[in-house]
Length: 243
Image (cartoon, rainbow, N blue to C red; front, top):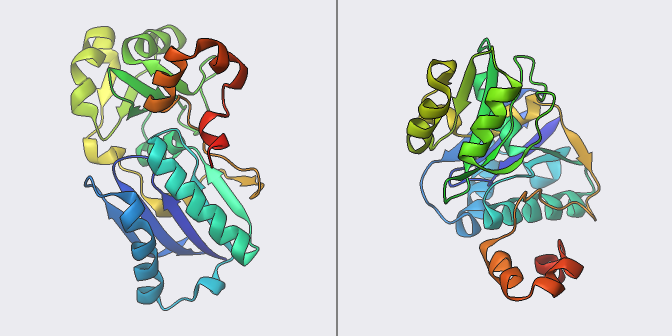
């Protein structure tokens, strides 16, 4: 089983070629590189280095979000195009599950966070078996509100926070949760594409698959503020309609 795995959901980007469960090559960037310019050349570099043809692929895996609006569209569009052209299956996994996988083995609740700006985050919580914590919902939250939800849902368990921006969240996390919170190093919050093949995947319909944004793009938010009635009638279709 030959797989191309793609993540463009955050500032960092990770792609890998995988044979069965073995990574043949991984490229992970952790700089503010433009995914739109870098993704296709880096994919080409992978195939050249590993000496595979694109036609050798058996499937494509991509993170579906939440995360960077532009990044998600680039990664998902690339994955869909390859799967459609090659007539191979397309699978997806959430970005938060992919981050949480870096904390496998911790004895407690894993709490991945993706910075959504303005003291808000994309968040979910998982138990030590990788299952979603009952009563919590993946989504876009004010960080303070999410911490309160975690405290109520998991009052007696250690909470392991994992994010590439953990330094920005540390003060508020400690203020709300004290010693219950355990902060993992920022490098643990970077998604590595080879891990995607080891997670529970969802097969997608290539024709209808869309990213899981979890929030509106800033342009959409501004548009809705100015056009509340039209927004109510068209919510969820504004950007997609423009394609």
